[in-house]
Amino acid sequence: MATQPRSAPPRGPSPSVVTPLPTRPSPAFDPSAPAAERRATLVSALPTPLRDVLASGRLERRPRFGDRGFDGVTEDWSPPDGVTGQQALMARRALDELTGSILAPASPDHLLARILALLSHYPAKGTAPEVEHLVALDWAEDLGEFPAWAVDAAARTWRRTQKWRPSIAEMRALCEEACAPEWALARRLSVIAAAASASGDGAGERTSHGRAGRLRALAGGAVRRMG
Image (cartoon, rainbow, N blue to C red; front, side):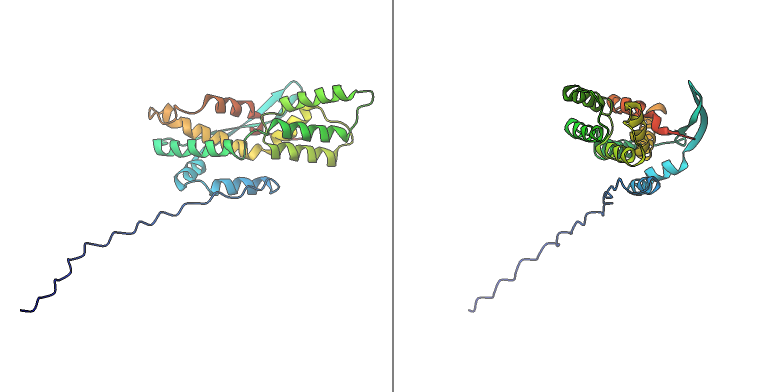
């Protein structure tokens, strides 16, 4: 009797192919681009729910007065009501990425090299090289919270527009101006991250105290200088 060929066992269902969801690529940061363009590029890379919160916030402007009278306009931004824990989490993650990359402080070596190069364009008569180096170390400490690209931009602006040696206060003002749009966005993200905690959600409670301190230290970026 001829042996009947065995039928092949039935095949199981083909495993489904999992296709990862497309992610929004991080935009290439160009510090030489206009301020409005840099901010628009950063905002466009945020998740849609987070962009909706930023677009729905409330902005209040108040005059600011210093020792010499009127000193500009302070802008206070607050998020809309009903920020969810998910939106706060998105804001916290975006803030961590922004402060850890684009707004990361310059390295001490970069600061010292940039400051010594700038001061060499305006040599101080009668100042020993050792003293000049100590002066540069003071500058590096006082500019330590700014990103390298902002310090570079401030030094470039001063070289091209001024004929005398700058003061630390003048360089700090230029650095604040250089990265004002990025710090304004960082402050708004920080407010969103804390909004859910204030409303009882609790999602914003883990916001870093050190990062909040840096945001307060650079509050000058929220002031629009008016000549």
